View (spheres, helix red, strand yellow):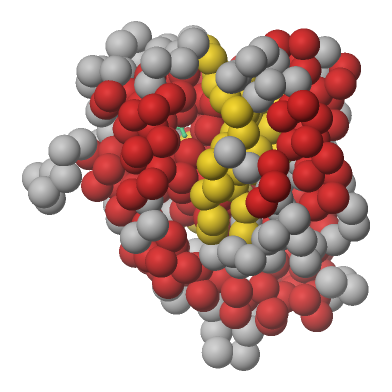
Length: 369
Ligand code: F6R
């Protein structure tokens, strides 16, 4: 049932192009519109939204962090992201015009469920993004968008993460269209880019050989650090989480701009630092800023593992290892930049002799508090 793969995790990583295609299926019209018929919130409900809270745990929380950048850019609605285990114990300001989006692969995570009840008590509308039909969280929500990723067996979340991202992009674009705001004219272009993602991911998955080799090389490290900016920041956090949970290795993700406020002191001769680089074609100074961060860590002895877009020559002089990913617009880039980090964690764990699909101390569905 592992379909020829050594682990469910590798099988699920390989299924990502198809999983994304399934999540997009039937939700995009040829006119470049997003149709979320199954989300039972009226267009008027969506126009009334004046604040969004995204609540989730673990990898699903990282999805929420990425979603914030996209949703605020496309819709101009203020959007906060919070760990469900924090949100549920505080007194967030919510009312009828607040949309609370829960993200949960399993639909059974206790903290996320309790956060949803907390939101409903205060009359907020709740939209669930979920991969498991008929599970508790979507049943108790006002609306649900299923990710259609298919069952995820490995404890570490991979295809669920990518399909959750796609679901969040769809929600952001749909909100922008319904509200007719300025960025609505970007929607058609983004829809076309989303449709290209399954093919891009297939190309990317065919290139993972060198990542496997690198993994064997890194398996004896004591620590691996990850840095990123903008949507590359949650990708860095996700890369570190995967490595902790699978390889039982110390790993940390940082917003690259925070390095000089403390973490750069961790860097020693040979410390591996994975750098998630945004597209040079993207907005603002992001790309230049991270290139200088890579120079900074390298000057302090780091061994740099650089994840950058095809054709990005500016990073070449500072990359001890280069992992190239297909060109992708900034906001959608986590769909590609995360994949090598999944493979890296899986292969490092395997090289260290661990049970990749069933890491110690972890359960697939966290139904306790
Ligand atoms: C990490 C992982 C966990 C889950 C978290 C939330 O690989 O799988 O961090 O993402 O336990 O689970 P769901 O999405 O089912 O609520």
